[in-house]
Image (cartoon, rainbow, N blue to C red; front, side, top):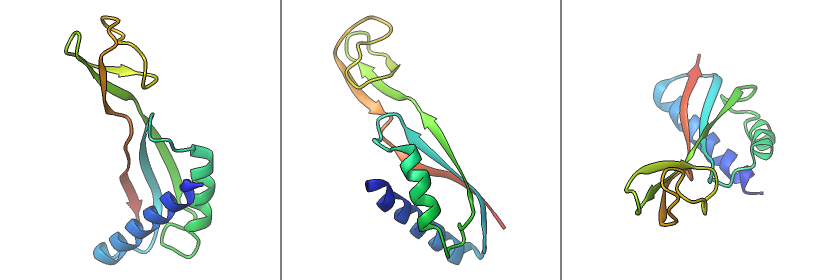
Length: 113
């Protein structure tokens, strides 16, 4: 379950930011998660609750924002949104797509006190 290690990485970031900026509590944490990131959101939510105990993010409301998959189509030279990595181009039907996004996961922002 790599979601546990993802949650531990988030905890490290929160603790570093708390030391740097002097806050003691995170009220809300917003994560952007790409469609192809391979993150099981229910597992991440569970891991987040467990890992954040004893940290400034204990009891934090976690919001997960879905980001679409994107690819560059070499047939029509457009960047398009795709639902699956091997989908054809939704504009021209071409099959020469190179994924350009949708595999990221990042903290968008935190509401702190």
